[in-house]
Length: 428
Ligand SMILES: Cc1cc2nc3c(=O)[nH]c(=O)nc-3n(C[C@H](O)[C@H](O)[C@H](O)COP(=O)(O)OP(=O)(O)OC[C@H]3O[C@@H](n4cnc5c(N)ncnc54)[C@H](O)[C@@H]3O)c2cc1C
Image (cartoon, rainbow, N blue to C red; front, top):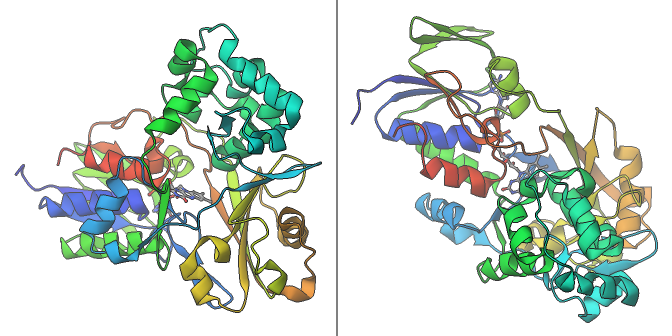
């Protein structure tokens, strides 16, 4: 093993805890500094109507198998669960329809399937079908997905299927989403084979079974287990400790907090991207987009039939919310924990702080297609997350001895973060 060194990890979300566990396991001295009074970052819990629910992330992508392998390694395999099957619904100004079964990122791959015709109408489905015969064109990675898809598939497919999906995932309009930000390498595939065939190939490559999994009790259980494992490997974790500045001095790092200055040989920055940019001048600042999640606990037997399956994507302008998850329909463990009520989670894209409570019930009623009254609300909790949109992974060690991981490095989602940890750029 390399000479043990003193490391400080800034941020106790999944990326910071993975780094701490890796470094401590390799025999280094590790201290994690976390600003909040709890660990987990966007993979932590919130209490709603007496239940502990996921406050941010609620599932993980199964692609690559890395998160599932980690879950097993941490002894949590008996908690792995798939969400309830069935498509998400889309609610638009004039119609509601289930997302077509055959498609990828909202791009329909069987243009004349009845569910595509239901969503697009005959004319829209016909227009989308023509794409296979439109001559190939070179597509640049920086081209906007909306523009390319409008040209090739028509407006109906973009506005009714692709836009609600990409807005739900990336928190930005499809006309402002770069093709390769939607999926790395997609531009080259569209250039080579067209959009429908590229989507069909991506879809065929997806492994059988659920594209996402969760954990009974919530995916926050993963960060609990990572923290426990990091501590058992010897890492020290300090919560309620905000790092205010970083300075390199003759090959060592001075890490300043309100309680004093700590010194380390190497530093891992595992905060959000805006927080990393505030600490490290070499990190490019990105716009601070925010996502607010409003969780409602409802006395609403009229939702027992799960009228919109496990969730709904809203077409821009129909509601302030961009999506809704019917958590008691989607996750059996939530339904068991809340047998006499319904838990519904709405997500909103925000440019600045805003209280969404006045919109939440009306948005839930519209998206679920069921009138709901104030008297049915048992509890309502809003959580706001900064740094909602992924950036391009950039330089991992902008200054010698200073390492970026997770969101600070431009990664988004547990699958990408765990995969990156396994390729470790930390030298252990
Ligand atoms: C609403 C929402 C839903 C999501 N859903 C999913 C999902 O279902 N599945 C999925 O895979 N991904 C999901 N994601 C993305 C996923 O949560 C993130 O990719 C992941 O949490 C990033 O991990 P991280 O450790 O890099 O950063 P974070 O989880 O943001 O953790 C960063 C930590 O750094 C701390 N920190 C920041 N500044 C400082 C400082 N100056 N000093 C000390 N500590 C500091 C923060 O308090 C925080 O605890 C979702 C994200 C959001 C916002």
